[in-house]
Image (cartoon, rainbow, N blue to C red):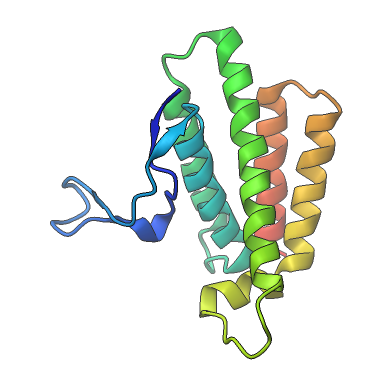
Length: 161
């Protein structure tokens, strides 16, 4: 277990000196956790955004970028451990997405949701299809690399619906 950021999401990463310079992280929720947690949460939030508010021409490119990010994070992890790590990434992604969706759906009707939150609510059927598909793949015991590829394909289909 290591120290993890805890609440890592795209809007908490800023590049004040430009995209090629060091990022600044805001709103840390530091805690002890597994090495997969930060990558899983960041991927979860990014994949959620791809489904809820897909870019006009870039959904596939964004999903490929998330895939490249996860593969880079897994570099240096032994082959046996990599499968376990990737499975944990996917399970944490699913849990995080369900948590976010349920939070937005449970918000009082008098409380106006931010635009990105409303987009998640509006895309709930597509998101639930992705969550169900990925959950089914994982519970079937699908090899983690294959499950990851299937999960990303499912996100791409949901984003280009």
